Amino acid sequence: MRLFHAESEEPGATTVKGGDAPAVPLAERIAAVRDEIERTGTYVHTAAELAFGARVAWRSSARCIGRLYWRSLHLRDRRHVTAPDEVAAECVGHLDEATRRGRIRSTITIFAPDTPTAPGPRIWNEQLIRYAGYRTGGRVLGDPRYVGFTDHARSLGWVPPSPMGRFDVLPLVVSGGGEWAEKGPQFVDVPEASVLEVDITHPDHAWFADLGLRWHALPVISNMRLDIGGISYPAAPFNGWYMATEIGARNFADADRYDMLREVAEKMGLDTSSDRTMWRDRAAVETTLAVQHSFDTAGVSMADHHGESQRFLRHLEREEQAGRTCPVDWSWIVPPISGGLTPVFHRYYDEPTDTGPMFRMDPQQAARGQGCPM
Ligand code: ARG
Image (tube, rainbow, N blue to C red):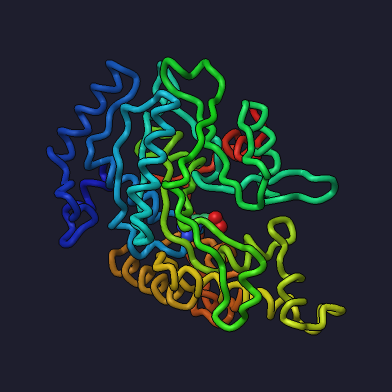
C-alpha cells in the first residue's frame, strides 16, 4: 500500500494508465484493510492496487530483459473465476486478446486468489501454448521437455492427434478453486484458431523450410504465482513477446529440446567431426536468424537480442533516475548467443530481491509443469 501510494504521487508515475490512482488516502486505506482482515482473514485489492501490483511484479522480474514497458501491461481482472472450464475459456480469451494476429500485447489474466476458506484455481501447464513430447522407443517425437506433462494429459483422457506430430499443442490442464478445489485437474483443448504459429524459413537457405520447423507466436507463462501485498494469486498467466534467441538458440538448439543443430550444420555443409570447427555456433546463429526472419516476414512481434539489450539498459537508467534499484539475474539477461556483442554482458547488476509484488515459482507448480502430480 505504501509503495503504491508513494509511487502514485510521483510526477508521471506508475499509474498513469486508465486512471488507476489510489481512491482514498493511505492511512484511510490501511485502516480499512486492517479492518477487513480482522473480519474476513483476508482483503480484496482494488482494481488500481491489482494493476499496480502486477506491473511492479513484472518490473521486479530479475530474469526478464523486456521490462522497459512494464507500465503498459494490459490487465484482465478475472478474480471472480474459479471453475476449471471457465478458467480454461478465459485462458483462450487471453490468447485472443494478447495475440491480435501478431501485434502482440503484454497481457496478464488474474484469477481468484487463495483465501483462508479456499484456494484459487491452478493452471498446470508451464505455458498456455506448448508442444507435446511423445516417447517413441529411444527417441522423443516433439518437445522432450513435455514428455511427462504429455503422459499426464493422456492419463486424464486427452487423446493426441493422429498421426502424432512434432508440434501438437497440448491441452490446458486446470484444477478449479473454491468449491471445485477438491476435484482433480481437468483437461481442455485449446482451439486451433487461438494459436498463432509461424513456419520457419531462412532468408538465404531454401532447404531450411524442409526441416519442417514452426513455433507459436505467444509465450504465456502460466504456472507462476503472483504475490501482491500478502495476497497470493496462484493462477495469473502473463505474456510478452518472444526474442528470437529463445527459440533459435534454445528451444531448437538445446540437446534436451528439439536438438536441431547437427541437422542444420550438415545441411549447411559444415564439418561436424570436431567441436573446433564451431559448427554448433554457426548453426545456432543461422537458426536464430531463420526464426527472426520468419516472424518478421509473418508480421508477428519479435525482439532481437541487440535491440532488446539496448532497451534494457534504457530501463536500468530510468529505474536509477526514479531512485530504485533494479534486480537482475545476469545469467538470464545475457542472451544465449553473442553475449559479449550485447551491452548487457559488460556490467554487474543489483541482486534479485525477495520483497514487494513478485512472480514466484512454487515447487508444486514446477513439478506439475513437468507432469508430476503432487
Ligand atoms: N523462453 C521461454 C520459451 O521459449 C519463454 C519465456 C518468456 N519469454 C518472453 N519473451 N516473454 O518459451
